Image 1 (cartoon, rainbow, N blue to C red):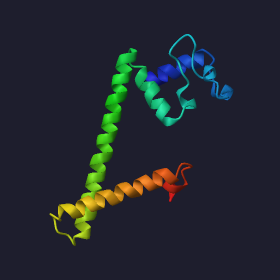
Image 2: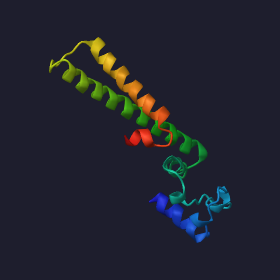
Image 3: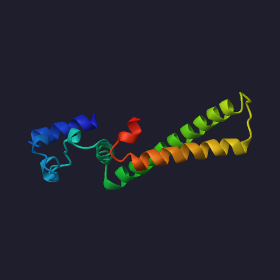
Image 4: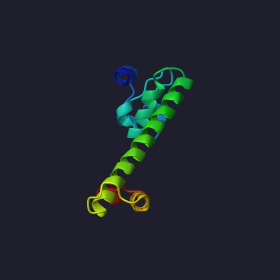
Amino acid sequence: SEGIRMDRRAENEGLDCGLWDGNPNSIFSNTTSAVRLWCLSTEDILFDQLASYGQQGFGDFLSVVTMICLVLYFVTSSDSGSLVIDIIGANGIQDPPTLQRIFWALSEGATASVLLNFGTDGNALRA
């Protein structure tokens, strides 16, 4: 609901994405904390939204907590994926060798890194 209020304040101040020419003054208010969120990229929307929940220190704290949660999510998801691939690779043995699981985890990480590095325009991630 804070994002909706922020966007409405920006609309009342006459801020519009149609004026967006790379100049932040066209979507960010000079007098209030209002911003046209839908004009921004996804990560900018997230951090501007988090910053609106209090003073500068609290917004920074929420950003750090968000980043920690995202890292934990991706690490645990990768670990689960490595376990599944490892069990499949071990012909269904429920407790496969640890070295084999490490191999699969490193293989997944290397594949993800290659896709992210070569896919700066997004083509590699769509494949």
